[in-house]
Image (tube, rainbow, N blue to C red; front, side, top):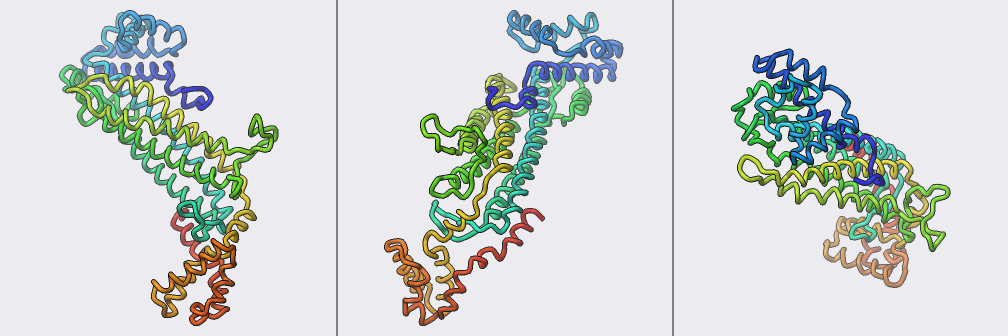
Length: 435
């Protein structure tokens, strides 16, 4: 995490104060569960809350760090400092538990907290895309395949496609949140030998989680693999939309453009430059989020009931991935909200190739008029190549081709060059996307 690409609410989830607060709640709720079974005195459980429930100030965190430098064990350092706060009753803390019970359950809570922010980010982005899609529902624009002019579409339809994609991403993230929202309070090697399963159920309910089906001492990492893979898919969707905007901002295209604020500079050497810096930045940030996928897949494998080969990976990728994706989603939302759209340039690009974009309609009309598809394709392509090579006008060439005019009248050919033909089903597409 670096401040340049971080937002405070997401960063706070991964800070020590929040982590230790969650650790405390896990331990304190476990004490309550043990007290309900009569394993520890109820007075002791109450004392843990009364004496230990204090903010994790820099001083408390520094004390934990000091103990860890001696013990080389983060959970022991935490429970040692907590015992200093609680006093005699602290001997009942962590009864029957193992470190992974605290670490993995806390990780689940942090990931759910992070996911709730990401879901809110997605809602904001979806709202922005929908607004601009409706605004440009019937704004004609060149559709491209292989980066080459294909057939007309509308800018609204383009954006509706991205809306549908991010709506799918939201559903994926909701499912991923459910998959990583599990609690493990099962003790060494996950057998509940020293702690009753009802304690796990109690802690899970209090922390907004579900009990893990089988925790071998750690929560199975296939859950986390799916979670971070979902973040990577969302990042890829961000990059896809960012790349589209980058292309549309190219000088030769200039159909849309990132907002360029007063006083903004594009180049230290060329004062005229207006560069797509935000969407280029989003392309890079997407790579960072995706980079977590291979390590997290490798984390699925651990030796026997546990090892800690996954731990260092998660300490790095969890903050980095969630913070980066949060920032990227917010940045993309701003890009969409302020995006400058140039319908006149879109119109110019539609007309750039002298009507070639209607070649598909001419091909179909000739086949319906009785010409084989192979012959019709050859006739249309021959006339189209004159436009590419000589700068001719496609409709004029067709009207001068006897093989065409034998089957299609001048009025029929004119009708084939109607742009509205390509937008006649836009309402249907929008109903499918927006309801």
